[in-house]
Structure formats: C-alpha cells, structure tokens
Image (tube, rainbow, N blue to C red):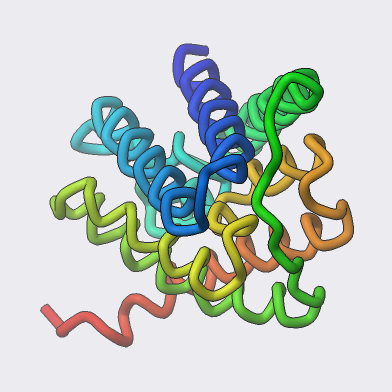
Length: 207
C-alpha cells in the first residue's frame, strides 16, 4: 500500500509541475523544470529500491513495464502500480485545471501530429528504458534528466513529460493536450519501453 501511495504522489507531482512549467518565461526553463522534477522523483524512488526489487518502477508506468520484463519487479505489482500512477496524474491534472483561472498566461507551442508524436516517443522510450536500467544498475539519478530534455527538444515544451504515460494523461485531464494524442503517446511509450527492455542486450557487452 505504501508503494502505491508513493507512486500516485510522484505521478501527481510530475503532472502538476509539467503543467505549471508551461507558465515559465521561456521554453528552456519549462523543460528544465520537468527535468528537475524527473531527477527528484527518481531519487525518491531509489530510496525504495532493495536488492531484489527496483523502486524506480514507482516513477512511471513505462519504468514499471521495463523493470518487470527484466525481472526487477513481480508481475502482480504491475497493474496496481500503473493504476495508482494514473489516478495520481489525473488528480494532478485536475488540480491544475482548478487553478487555471488564477494562473497567468502560458507558453504557446504547436502540438505535433499524432503520427510524429507516436514515432518519436517510441524511439525515445527505448532510450529512456536504457537510461532507467543504467540508473537501476548504479548510475546517478541525475541521468533521469536526459529523457525529458530530449523529449522537450524533439516534441516541444508541452511534451517534455511525454515519456511518462500517466503524466501525459494528466496533461490531457488539465486540457493541455488532446486525449487522442495523449493516448497515442502513452501507448507508444509503454510498448517501446518493453522493446527497450529486450533491446538493451544489443548495446551492452556480453558477460
């Protein structure tokens, strides 16, 4: 139960920050804010890592899928943790929606076409899975900043959080992203995370 609460809280915080980041003075600061919260949530998640299980699964549904496929999380954990993350992200999106009238203007960005969004996220999610496994293997949590920076540079500031499926749905809840695009991005991210779990053997030296 504690893990589910942490997962929901991290998803809510990630969504809330990603949405509010669109009020930043410029796109660079917005992406850096998303990258910063990614590093923070990754660090918090590592506090829940044990010798047998990775706490990094608490950061996103994509991470949970990758870690399940490499044996770092049990199968029974997957659906509850994904559900908790979606609930947390939706609540974060609703919080932003409730504050919308009290917030200032936001950055203008062009939402990419659905095909472009799906393809780019699929490719980046494979790279994100490799970053995740590197962090789980002992690399510094600061590496968690890489996926949102690349996503923001590739897809625009509004999708800097594109590699976190639950947070993307949270942004749709907040009215900052269309539900169709959010669904495509979230689906592509989860599928590609599974591919990344298997593809890691292609870029790592044999033992």
